[in-house]
Image (cartoon, rainbow, N blue to C red):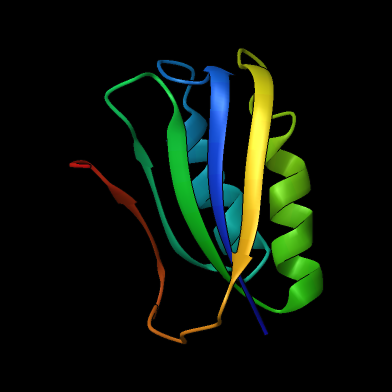
Length: 92
């Protein structure tokens, strides 16, 4: 099992990045959360099977069709098993 903390920069707000990330996470059986940051980036935490998490991180490098992803920072952290589902968070 794998836990990855991701921060995505570029034109990633106002392009349905959070909603599409949630959809991709559910499709890939990944748990965790995604939220917008005040500085225009998107932050997420992904937990699940290593291949599923890697697939979601790879998806973040492209994002939804209107996004322009400039950089993805993905840091593997210790797996926690703390998440029961995947959610959009609305407050940083």
